[in-house]
Length: 196
Image (cartoon, rainbow, N blue to C red; front, side, top):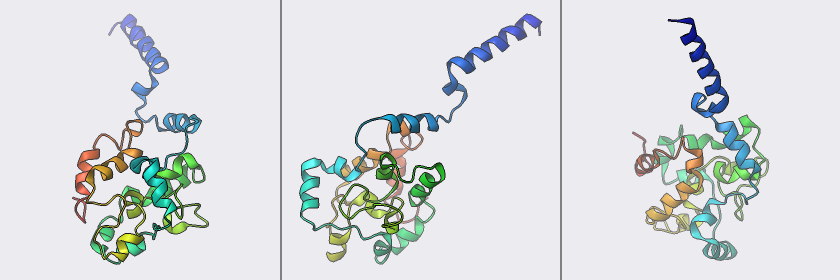
């Protein structure tokens, strides 16, 4: 190879590194996190986003709905609970702790259960049972469901697949594309107790 070709390739590589770092460095998660934290928009409350403000406010004002924690869900849905023990949702809060964002409201709506909702996650010190994304993180408070012996009672139950998919898309957005691209495939796997 000629010396001039080597020089041209070197210059091209340097320009590529300067001009388009995201092409060379695939993981731009820190940049996305910084952009999200700089955004002045309100923190995400997934349940509110899905139900709409009016229905959400009415449901929460009724004081009928209460988060129970996934240990209560396990009483009847043991196979599903055990089958999902290694699921990324079950470790979502741990990711915040590792990165130093465990008290940031911009992150808590998507990494805990019920943050921003009456009787939902407040902090790891006061509501540790609601850390991570548990069953109720996607389905809404479970106390009404428990009282009805598994016959409805969830604000976003399996009987409402459109709302359930909308709930997923509240946190799994294109901005966080590593989890968005295969959303529909993953959603279908959640219909079974054990992932395949």
